[in-house]
Image (tube, rainbow, N blue to C red; front, side, top):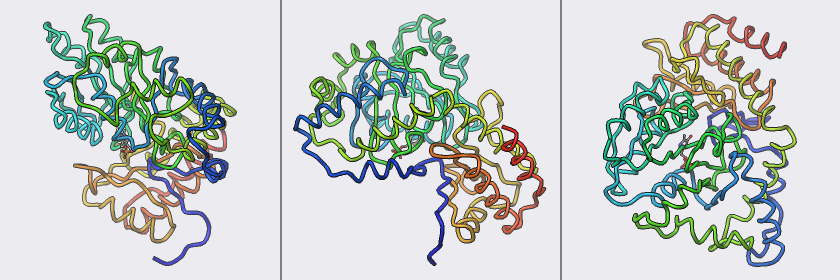
Length: 388
Ligand SMILES: *Cc1c(COP(=O)(O)O)cnc(C)c1O
């Protein structure tokens, strides 16, 4: 590849662009993770972390990717042979239920068309039919990163409660936390799964589980084998400001800085910013005469937009042209959407002009790739960004 001047546009829906302040924080010298300075740092960090989840209980941090946080959520709350309900919202929901099966759980996989979120009524119907309460957990991906569809978690919780079924609710917020409104306690979520490299504006490498009291109680009898992913030693060590094994010290420095940035802007303002940028992106897509993959306006994702290609046009060719000519990375279609969609990430460290540059690159790339579009898409989006 030839060298390019200027900054690379990393507009995949994670990993996202890491702010300079966060990079500088990460560059500080690594300290003794068993020393007093580290204990003081961790104690403050953990206190600052809960509010991003809307959680007052423990948030367990592991060095790992989001996939590790999926595993931690399952192995700490469930036992071999338990039934779990997953909903087929897209590629990530499909991978999570495959993991559940591999771990020895029986999965009821509610089929979906990859254009809608998890349907609260369908979840309630399945639970209502399970009068023996053999389903121990409902697993939902809040923001399905493969499709740009956000499930209505609070409605799912309410529908679950209405059935009186005691199943736990486990929610993947890997591409929504810190970008899209989310409330662990208020919505009655039992385990919230998250990762560092999307809305939290960090490099990959940290995984999180926010844990409810009910989930903590379940962990005391959950029989799935676990060692590295066991919550208990982490929660115990955290009480004194430490971790049972070596933490990702420098990523934790970055996390402290990212949390400071989110607090300074204010979470409501952060969410509103993502909503505006998502709306402007959808305006551009519609202006180009292209179709959004998300089919329900109540479920539009504010962190990414998946664009469906016209029949006969190849989304990967568009991405290739854009990378080659404009040094911008866009998300590929995953699983059965390969070649059919491309995904524009507009989350994390992002502002109006980053979006303007992103959409300009997409528009030029579509034209260069020979996709028939209306060039007014970009202008329509700029009108929204100007007037916001
Ligand atoms: C990125 C992502 C994952 C996978 O996380 P890794 O860090 O790649 O393991 C899982 N679920 C969702 C919704 C994601 O966006």
